[in-house]
Amino acid sequence: MSRTRTRWIAAGVVVVLVLLALIPIGRWEARRHANHELSGIRTVLAAIGRFDGPKLAAYRQGVGNPGLDCLLYRRGSNPFALEFCFDGEGRVLEGYDRRGTSPRIWSLREDPSASTIHVDRSQLESLIARLQQPT
Image 1: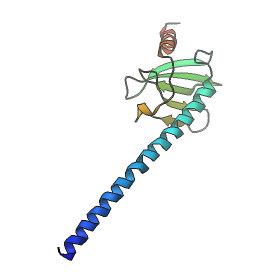
Image 2: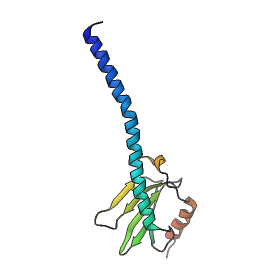
Image 3: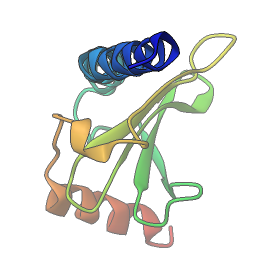
Image 4: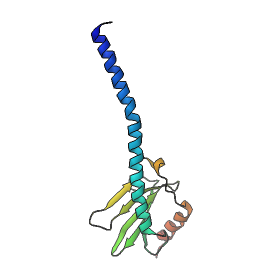
């Protein structure tokens, strides 16, 4: 076997090994990202408190995702200060905190299965129905 061919084979093996090493790194990064986003979403939910509280201000369907529903809560003069969005299975996928000068957004929209936060979808459906009733 020629020296050049041996070098190419060795280089190919190194490339394959490097690519295989990237798999656990990618999985670690995905878990780290999901944990960060979940932490932010939990912060928003804690600030909201009870979902049916008097600060519930509005409902909207998630932009670009018809299966996503969102509830918005007022704080002070801001009727849209806090928001969380959930899917048809009750997984909470997004949290918004607009109380400061720049909004903070946490999202797992790109990987809904990573969400470990679940809400009672039927309870939220009744809140949505209440918001949609004419006043």
